[in-house]
View 1 (cartoon, helix red, strand yellow):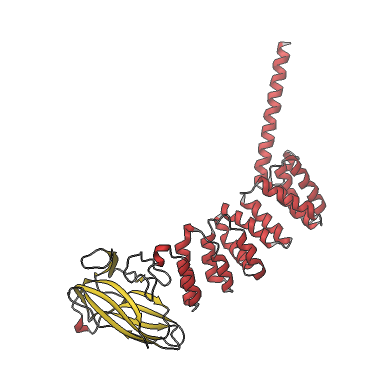
View 2: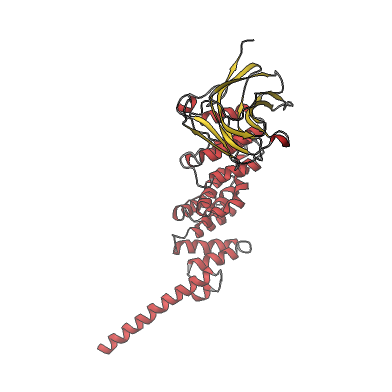
Length: 405
């Protein structure tokens, strides 16, 4: 009797071990997409799903039955429910197909392959907004899908009737891929309204870089008013206090290199910073240090939106052993329209001096000058003017005053 018990126990161990081997081998073969897995164990759900996949076009009915059985055997496999949704949709069982798609999303909401299949399912049903929801989840799980999914998603956003729904998907949560998608849209979108809708899907994490890229795009397209208000909406309460014909003329607020604020020319020849010094107004003044011969003549600049009329640029400067060819000066030029002409330029600043006030008169023409550029420029002059480059200049209290006509 005792020997029989041991024999029975040994038999159970063998059977249990065999079951483990059968299941594992079948799953291994299924992962290899080998339908031969069914020869090991015909009810392995993953193998069934693979066989159904192979039968989709040749025997849809059998594929559906096999997929249903696989779903029954493993209700936690979202791949099976996603395939079942596509099969049921093809056969006209629309409500059942929708239920299967919802089940696939429920059990595998973060699986990229399942989400791709669900995106295809909703696109096939003619519901692109639902498709975008699943493409977004697929991108969250697998960012490399951007190359194939961004064109399709932009295509949805380009349709005017779908833009609001597209933006609404991301109101509660801005995905990690959004900034990359916006940059893709900047290069490929046909309609400016599409870019505006995508831009308004804001995220603080990428706010500065995205806003900067969008503002540069709008300025390049000569959409100056749109650019101005996008820039204005990006200012905080303190920065709004620095508004004027010249923004932040006292350099009390950070230089952000965007929109209608100060923009620095980034190159090794210049070192620019808003710093404290003697004799300045407020907390800070702009310090420009010249370290070598520059490649760019412009040092720092700002876009202005001055109405036509007579103006005077006023400010204070203090050069410190400044050696820069003929010197540095301020200039106002037109941009936009057909007129790119120089409006006005100041005198040269060079050498060393105490704080001094300067003025520069300027007349903005009525036509062809909707936006202007105010820039600090180095004039290298002729070869005999160049005796090396170095020194610095401090700048403060810039303002553009409109004169009574």
